[in-house]
Length: 108
Image 1: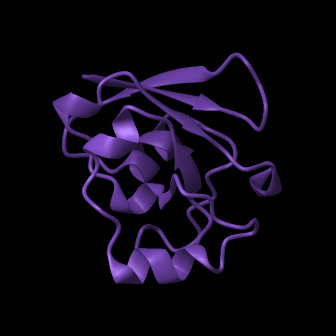
Image 2 (image 1 turned 45 degrees about the horizontal axis):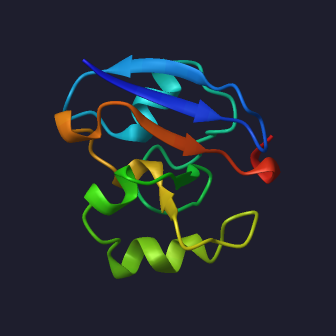
């Protein structure tokens, strides 16, 4: 199992969940009851309600965001940052165990 910790906007303590490898970060968040991940489109890359900011060193381990994802981030409720990603586009792998992500305040 892979552990992921989600941090609400500017909170020092996060909520940790576990998920199986191969699961999208978005589906793991939904299954784990993480508030702030609405996933209105269900992972079809047609909304930006699963916007997260991935902390290092995990961001560097992710494949580069594709053009579709980068474009959709422009529709996020808050301005994208250099570490912004859509959780629906992140497939969990063993290398991402322990990953920490921040949730934008605008998604609460």
